[in-house]
Amino acid sequence: MAKAASRGTGVLDKEIEVLQELLAEFRDRVLDSYPDNVDAAAVGNWQLLAAIDALVEGDKTGANYHFAWFQALSHVATGG
Image (cartoon, rainbow, N blue to C red):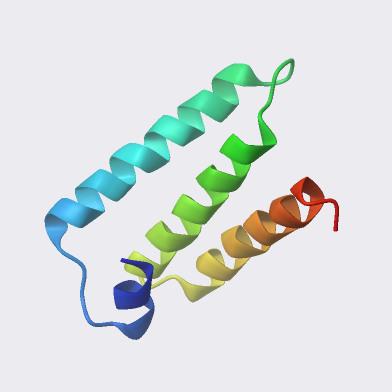
């Protein structure tokens, strides 16, 4: 889906629906766990899904923003 969105070749409505459901699920999971028990992997997944969602919407700035957060979280998680 990310490849299709970034290339502008189109994404199916059902795929967008599933993406938005997953995005809401991770958002809620992260926000519900804040501030006592935040899972960095869940935040990373949330940011990656948000980046893909932004690509689908044609928002390259938003996609870059969320992907940068995903990369930063991944870098920290791997000890890099």
